Image 1: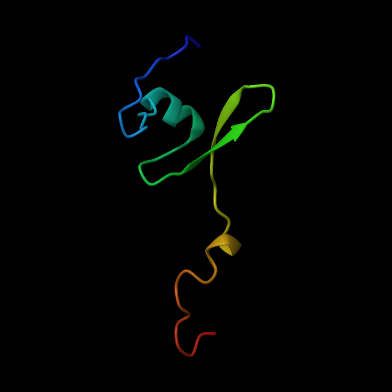
Image 2 (image 1 turned 120 degrees about the horizontal axis):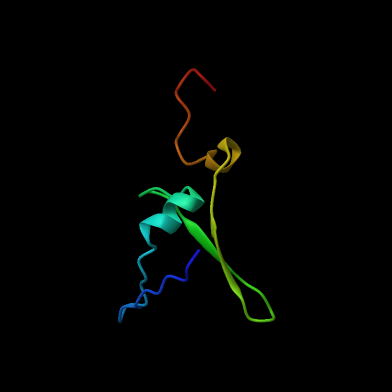
Amino acid sequence: MQPITRAVTSNGRVTIPKRIRELLGIDATGKVTFVVDESGPVELRPISYQWEDLRGIVPPVPGKE
């Protein structure tokens, strides 16, 4: 795959190209994490949530606890 270059805005934002989002399976509501290696390279990884990660975000349904 050819390198893809994007500009960084004054707010520090970068648009992730559609091709990269598709390869990583990131949709419009997706999140990513940046992993910095001590030797210099930075990895962009998609975050996938498990049901256990979501516990406590929505209150339980009364009578269904």
